[in-house]
Length: 230
Image 1 (cartoon, rainbow, N blue to C red):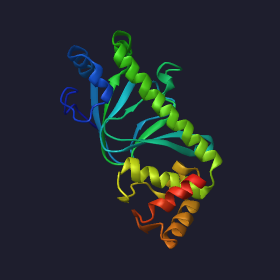
Image 2: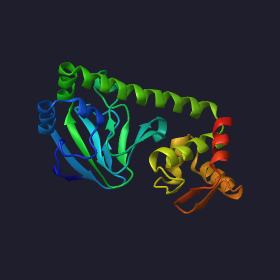
Image 3: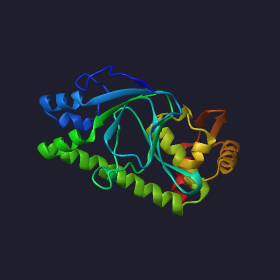
């Protein structure tokens, strides 16, 4: 981890959208209670069960949020990109982070005192509504992911994961997958071996082309059909 504040909230090009609802004075208060740190790929930024003393915002890079379960088994519940905020029900619940966050790429993260965010929620109705919308959006996605992981077969789950990586995370049908096969398994609720097997099947069927870390989706329509049919 590398420490230091290299920017301000006012000048940040990857700030959380909801900060636009703050007044100039309120944003200055947030900036005064902000701490920025850099992380290398693979480093843990936040541990499940740790206190919600700070809100975490991604300024650059890509991170993964995951739940740690029985016998160390992990389920990846989402990915963070610049401008995203990490918050969970623990902020107004048990005051604990409900999942862990680690760096997939080198990244920089901003930590802002949770007490300051709660103060803004009380003072600024638009900011409070923006926070509720953000939490609600993440909850809806988690519910849909839970449904997919428990009711779809493996081919459908892996298709869902590949479509998310293509459409949402990398925004390209030809991308360098920064996730290991183990991480793809943690994201789609299957073993690493099953991920490798189904990727090979998709490759042989001409649905996609796999060359090491590089994945190119050749037949988006067919991949979407597998995703829907489960």
